Length: 443
Image 1: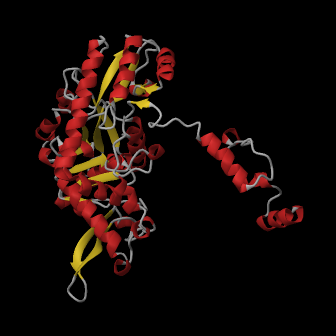
Image 2 (image 1 turned 60 degrees about the horizontal axis):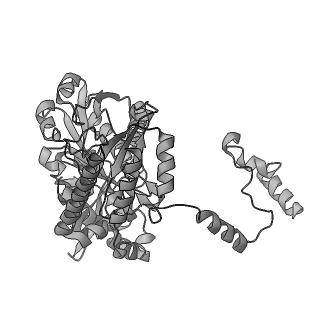
Image 3 (image 1 turned 180 degrees about the vertical axis):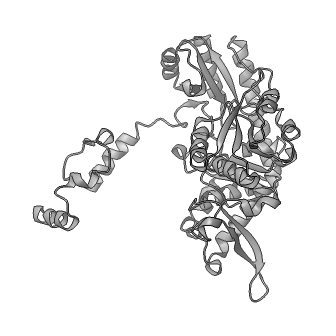
């Protein structure tokens, strides 16, 4: 064995195994996994399963955790279709003659999302909502020739981190627009923030606090036609809420995880990206379209691909080298199964159950900072207690009460917990009972 290792080391021009990991900083290396040398695969699998059994998922907890990734019901048919070899092994369909199935599925996804968003065109997906936002900002700047882009004061930290990275590399100046006393975009501050350099603005509907921002329909009149409007949405809310196309959005983005993809430990996700027809050639990603083959029969083809691998680099819109085709197919299956009435029913259940929980919170005298503002399926609560106290109570009750906002969102008071609470169609009466007990302990 040692002779074999020495031969390998010599071939690789290294002295020992440690050199293979020299690129990994020492402070993040794991010295040992607690495994003995020479253990067999079966034994290692058994130990790994024991470790995995220590995980607590939403199936073992009373969970009200949302804040970007949501626990919606996924019909069995979605996984059944996605696990077919024709889809699960399909990558970017470069050869149309051998990829008609996946191309048709992606075309159906584009058509369904275009109808849902009321946008002229939707691409075949981005990585997630964060990268969709980053690409949207860059697209807006490229189209308008202006280098300033407005973003809301409160947005998910991962979105902010990604768009800041995009902005830094592309020379985009980000400017923050404040929220008003109702937890919505402050229209007066928006007006004051617009300059000659402003290319466009990004707003969310519902926003980070779950609030259905009734100021969003007024944004177009404020920014005018010479600046572009980007609206971020929760796609599953569009069964009951007006789509971004109704507000004259130039670009619409969203997180498609809610459309039949499940939790999956936080990924993979699905970036939804739609735009007006006049901006199609400036869109990132890929577009599938319908054409005819040499026999005159209907066929599918990739009609637009704007990444730098396919066209001259100086003409490229993006260098994003892939998409989430499999996840897009899953969302298409999910929307096909639900239909208009099913999507509306889910939206109504989410809003109705959320209102029930809000009433319960107010019953115990817990503060809801934006209680007068309409919400979809999550809302902000404020508890006068420390985070450690909250954690002790929730551990005892087998409960995850929501997402606690920290200093990255401007909340610094250690004796106050600001928490975004989420309700979906999967939230049970038993979950509500656990939350009631939690409120009785912290009120």
